[in-house]
Length: 143
Image 1 (cartoon, rainbow, N blue to C red):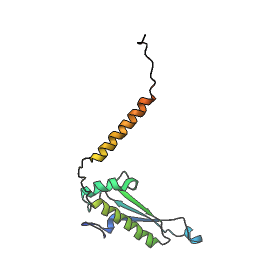
Image 2: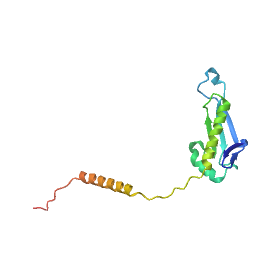
Image 3: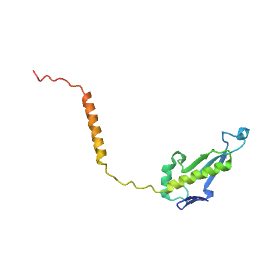
Image 4: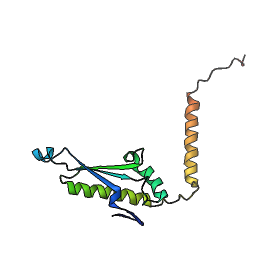
């Protein structure tokens, strides 16, 4: 059972681990050991996640969430399969914790007098610059 806090726990039966060959340090042995971990979790089809958490997870996960709703986490940081597995579970736990927190509502504030003044000064400066660029064509009215 993976406990992500906030009352969210995912049973191990919903998690699928694949162990694959991984490059990196390890010498000759690296070609024979499947130490990298690919963790798959059907987040959108999981009965253990509330709908609002699924929605936030969809935004947070980015490219790790496939179109079919499966969350894929790769981990090949360590040489040992067990440590990579634990690290992948930690990554999933962190994602679920982040998705379970409701974002704070932004409180509306009005701009300060100083910021309004800075904005107007910038607009005046820009206007003056543009006016100075325009060619002044002499008029023929003064005969």
